[in-house]
Image (cartoon, rainbow, N blue to C red; front, side):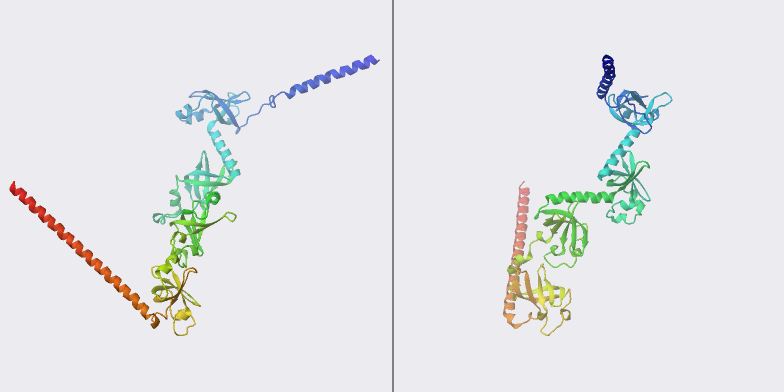
Length: 441
């Protein structure tokens, strides 16, 4: 009885061991070795060219499948394009027909290229990257752009407006779009629908992204004190923006000139190319401060050499305030203040009772502080007796300087005339010698 029990146990162990051995052996079989994919129209397969002829291109697409390029596609291909296909080339194919009447798989290289382009565009769309495309056509709504085998559409609202030349101002919007055919554009995909063959692009979005990337690079390398070349991109009441090559910096109104500027348009115009001095770089706020006047000599550095207290100067009224009037000295960027008490010997409530902006007047310097960049001027002291001696000496010096200049001019004139006489005399002597020599012969 015990022997029968032992045998029954052993009998059960034999099939279990066999089953375990089968399981172990299956673990070493590659996954998918006994699975075959059912091909469908639209599948994209990687294959290897195994035969090439003018009538047929045979491609091994794996899993014991071989397909052929459709005869219609081969007929439409240039002979040179067929010659470029070599045996052993790895190619991407598109399944046109999983099985034709002859039992063959019909493939397409052209459709595969189209699908490959779509896949590439999908990656760019997901990564939000910029791409470049050529304007292939246009319609009333915008521009048609060619991206490999795929065509995309750029709505007119997404096209960056370019500065119009004089001859383009008379063109209609449609005529201007026609002139853009063939132009390369930086673009960003804003909508992609593969099923409906829909690809919408934006030049504006690409430009914003490109400028943001350029600004990041510029902020990383820009240093205070650098001198950069740029183009004025826009003007506003508080200053001018300058494009430094993808990033804008601001020239504040106070940094446009050493003199007073009421509006940036008095100094710059959009489109002007300028050299600018980098005042500061704020990488956290992504701001660049620029200066135009720092590249010009500071007029206040020489002010004490050119001007002195008591001197008469000519100035133009630039601004009126409740406490006085500002005047810019002729031929200079220096501005001085005429206090309201220095405008007239009579009591006045406001400078406008005596002067107006734009008036050119003779003024007297009564205070000078180059360190604080301040000059005090007076209108009422122009004819005061206490400055009569000073004015006479200044006038006398000017007269002497003018007389010296006249003497120099007269002297130069005499030297020039003497030179002409000597030249004429030399020519006459040479002519006489020539005549004598000819007579001797």
